[in-house]
Image (cartoon, rainbow, N blue to C red; front, side, top):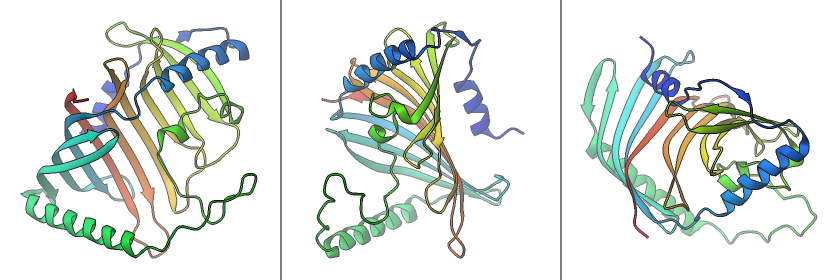
Length: 268
C-alpha cells in the first residue's frame, strides 16, 4: 500500500500541464520577481490567528519504512506573530498497536519547557555582534526563517538561477511555477520550486531543500502550502518535512512530519 503521506503529496501537488509563461530573459524574470517580492513585503508579519492542527510524525528506518507514528490533535494561537500550541489528544502507533499517550506527552512537554527556561536563565550575556564587514564569529545556526530562504529580493537573486513556467491547478487557477537553483551552495540558499498565483502574485506552495545541507544533516526536504487571508495574512495550510540527521554516536533521526491546518480564523 502506498503510504498516506505520499498519496496526499501527490494529490496536493497535481500539475495539469506546464507551458511557457514568459520569455526566459533576465528582464522578464526580474520583472516577475519584483512583483512577487513586493507582494511578500505586503504580508503582515504580526498576524494574529487561530487554527486546529492535525500533526503526524512518523519515525522510520533507514529505508523510510514507518516504525512509530505519533498523531497529535492540537490548537494553535498566534498573537502578533508569537505562536503558542496546546496538545489536545496524542495517539501513538507502534508494532501495530495504538494507544493514547496524551498525559505522558503533556508531562514530557512541560518538563522540556522547564528545562529550556532554566537553560535560558543560566545562559551568559550574548557576545557583542560582529562589526560590519567582518565574518560572523562561531558557527552559524540553521534556521527556517522565511526571510532567509525566499530568493525573491534583488540582493539575493545573484546567488540563484531562475526558470519560469505556467500551469493550472484542478480548479483552473493560473499558476506560475518558479524553478530555483542555487549558484552559490549554502545551507541558507534553498532551491526547488515555488508555486505562485499568476494573477495576485501570492505564494501558494513551496517544495524546497537547502542547496548545502547543514552540519549533521544528510537529507532535508520541506513542502509547504499557503493561503492568504484578508489580503495580507499569509498562513500555512499544510507543512511536510522529511529529515535524515545525526552524527556518529548521536541517535540518527529518520522522520517524516506533516501538519494539516483547519478552522483558520483571523483574530486581529
